[in-house]
Length: 318
Length: 318
Image 1: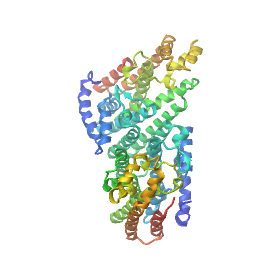
Image 2: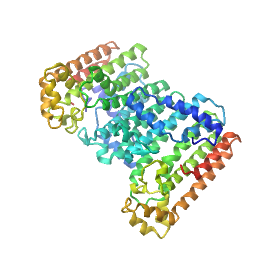
Image 3: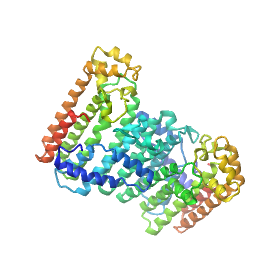
Image 4: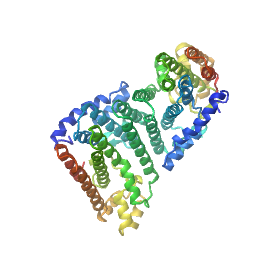
């Protein structure tokens, strides 16, 4: 398990896994099958762990915290299913996707079902204000996904566009998870904001590392088939850096005209021209900012975990 | 406009249309375009009209009522977009669908965006209990859609299965709209239940008539291309009746093996064997039940509208 090195959190995450499984139960056999296969495919449960860990900084109401943690993860699962429809992916985390197993139709509605389940669970525990915040976050995530489609095959997008994109793609939900956890724990307004910023910076770093891993030799590490963002016209920072700031710009542009064919060569150039190192440097600076924020919270075992988690993100090959 | 014959409601529905348009605004140009084209394609706004009309039976808080009415319609729009992805429909109400205009990817996320917008709006006005009820309704609708996929190409499904399917497909949201309207208006528990039952029966009739119209000579009336439910393996009551209760069972079964090719012949047989008359009879009995329920509410102009609406549903060729 991902959390093995954090025994304190590990036990709770194991119990939470059972809780999540129960929360996902449906009377409809097909939906049940689709969801449970997704749940079993696992995942690191980073988002619920952020809710749980930040909530431990204050008054800990386990029932409430787990409800919110489950809702956040279920929402994430919904976006994964819908992402796979768009990407027409057959594999995720090395397992067949819902759409490969059950067809696009079941995938669309299973995603919708999970979105709704999120709000169903939340309306039992969240305040209307929290609900509105969550709905707003998902709205922005959806807008971000659409923006990513608009920006496809466009090498001229700015760094700012890229950072905005990864913020909505990943950082917003990390931020929301931490803000919700800290909020349930009734931390001070300042500490809720610190936790939220930790989440946002961690999420930015997480996505930057993800975008670097997209160029690693063996994409199987990510459990995805060999379709990279750049073969789909999605240009991330490693590409943008090489195109904007090195002499390989012309060559890269030409190679990107046939991205599937020039697959290995593109990876090689991006690496050689420093695109990966540059991106990892930025990721590291976000990790530093994340740790600065969390260091300002109370010094306890969960603070240590969140700091170690930040370090783990930058070293990850998961 | 659909509501022209009901001047009292017509004015309010026109103003509501502007309100809905504002509620749908997004800063993301692509999402904005997709949604506004869907909004402009119109639709009858039956569900929000039900919220508004039932709310007029009690204390009328326009702001709250319109919020809920908008949320219900937006949720309905979300399911339409996702339905079109599954059906791979290019036309709805005679206009190009979101997925035909913008691609499947934008369609998936626009639907998600609308789902979330629903909860965003609701969390501003609905109680947690109402929210949970709504989330539960959408969950059941999603389960119903998936069940419909499971039942594809199965001529042996029971009438009970069919009625359960149209309940979740249409009647639940009609029921929810009326229950919400009556709830905001603070009607008595009994009257809320009566309004809810009116909605459910109206919805059942509405879907039965829809399923009859699927066999009409000119499907263009519905603004859909010439793809019928039965060509997609979705068997509705007209088919089930002819298969189970007439001597055309064998012939129908054979024709359904090549449904696109035998398109006209299937329609002819289903009509000739009484499938359409039978289905309309059932629809009429639901309309009668709906009117009985609403007749028990206070005698006012909105009661007359809801009764006239029920009659309109059974006569409709829209």
